[in-house]
Length: 353
Image 1 (cartoon, helix red, strand yellow):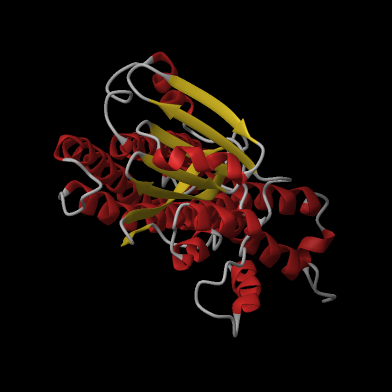
Image 2 (cartoon, rainbow, N blue to C red):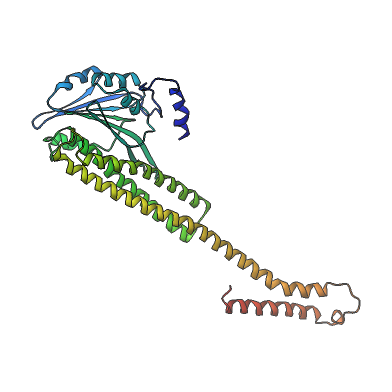
């Protein structure tokens, strides 16, 4: 979070709506892709400049413009100018520390969500995903190439389901649904990690285990911060308060809302489990320390009478009758071994050892 605070200082003193990229540069270049479709036609284009987007402005077909990369702010500003996007929206698009939110400005819907992935290295990667929805138009902004929308693109290409028959509001639903569905994939990976740590806690807890638990705790907190406001965003979309969302599509947004509730319930469950894991780790370490102290106490207790006998016969008194006996040395060793054996048997009988 500190890196965003430091970079945000670049905006100090600038006018509201000034487009300044805040966040990490995750792409070498900006990539623009256009998918234009209706029930009969489909066209996919890799755009070389923003000017190539202009013909879709008045097109009766649904147009999806996807921009990968946010660091070239002049391109972002040009897109905003061509499609009459308010400068404050563009400012939020390139500020990648935004929380999920929904706004309606100048007849356009603006949505910000977090797109999450779970890597094979058991780490969560996140990027800001912004949507601008207008009549027959969806403009999406990503920080880098690669997303969770391959299924949506396949449905568009193959004409599966309703996506080619409905408008931009349904395309927006499909994109949000893909993002929320991928949250379940992330939660599944976290669940497997929790199971591994629980087994490790029971068998052999080590300091690295505590580090992993704290990391999981941070991941859960980030997930909760990403999903909690998104739930409110989806709920607002499903109420029918926006002219950009048709009555036909509202029911689909309610389905996504149900999914976000399931995600939140799972996150809350995992948070409780991880809290219990911290207590379990502390208990395991405490029990392990108690076992060590018990063994050391037993050994010290056995050596107390042995030390007592050795201390008596280690004194330099001239008149000690046992010193003149031929079997004095073996007798002392016999007493030491006997006392030690009796104590060990007693401890085992009491199940202290």
